[in-house]
Image (cartoon, rainbow over all chains, first blue to last red; front, side, top):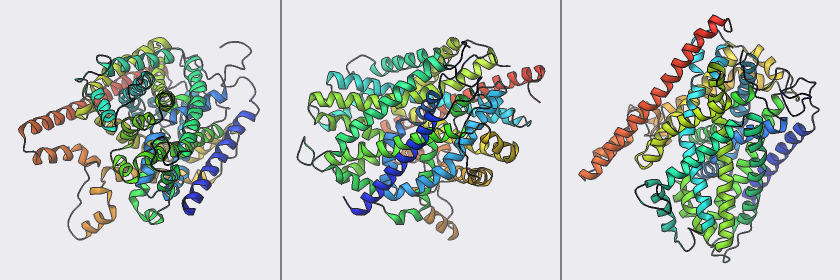
Length: 47
Length: 555
């Protein structure tokens, strides 16, 4: 591969992958808010 | 207040559903074609700039409008917008947020049904032993209806199956239907995408019929032509791609976000869903179709095919290329490729059903099942012309007016409403309420000034697109006193049917002239049908407005 194409591809792909993983991990690890929240699966009683 | 009991089951389910809404056919078929036509690797620069200046601000705006409207008991855009500003016009602007979803779903579900049909054909080995011309012919026969493929009226059968699946899932509700599909579909889509990307990136010239290494395709896609950055056409292409890929200006993001409570985060959710779409588009979408196509067909042939759009590559070329891998691998690759497209499609079409369901539920107190059936019936009636008259351009008419024009109008209006009428102070507070990340204040500036202005520019660009999309030449021509020549794809050119009229004028064969005139008639009729749909929704909104006024729900 040409060097400039390889650099462009590697920089773009790794930057986008890293940012995507960072935000998704943050979604998974952020503590849920106090009830009542928007999500039904952690409710004590069904809605 | 709204009587809906719908809710998201989990936060990750909501993010995956939002990402699924954004991820569609365009991620795999449109993006790579746009990139190779607009500067290769350098395209990523205007593309990511557009993502930050247009995409992310609009995501924040749409999530905020949705949650704000939802807390006022509204789950579709007409009354979400009306609740943000007392001017009566907004509820009619909000009609676009239902209209676009109906219009787009009408042809999108048809495309989705192609993926089902092609999974079926991959499994039974229909493409085995066919040459490239025969694979192209199979697609042409399929959409023609008059030629028999394997099952009589196959496109109609698969269209009905596809609609049935959508209706069934929508009838199950948000958590048990849409969210469940997103939780299964999105990971599967990523796994299929990764497996196909690995296969594409390990292509070697001389093995399994390939004539080029995968690196030739990657070079073709990623070699930057930095001069292209100075071309306005490339910026319009990048802005449009960001716009379509994130499903902005449709009203579906607002509908999904309307089931959130006031104190729950939208900032991190919007960021996560938006970036997930970028990952699928740039990382996976860029690694499949171009390396495989260049590996087998070479650069010049792929350039020629790309000129016909991504659909040609995805449905008319890829099955033939897979068949070079032997019957078993071809079947597996076919199921993965069309399965991936199916999941990309259905997670988007389900999002198109949600605002329609929200509107019917809010305004007519219909049950989830009844609203799902109504959506299916509407799409069946409005979508059938795209099935029956695909070759006569009805599909393209729907795509242009609902999938481009309506989106630009609506997005520009909602950005103006949010920043200038609702007010950036209130809007900024809304974005940050319950936020799990600190949103940079740069976005406040972008939302207040840059995004609305950019949207107006992009919209005007679509209205006045010059011939060949060559803005430099067009302005030069204007200053030299030669006037402005509209491209056939510009709004003005489309409205005047310039492309078809030119073809009619140039045709000499009476049969061809008659065919073209029939096409012109159907184009105009399909526009009238879409206009009637818009007016119908507007009348329903008007009726509901007076009821809300009487009930004191609106100022």
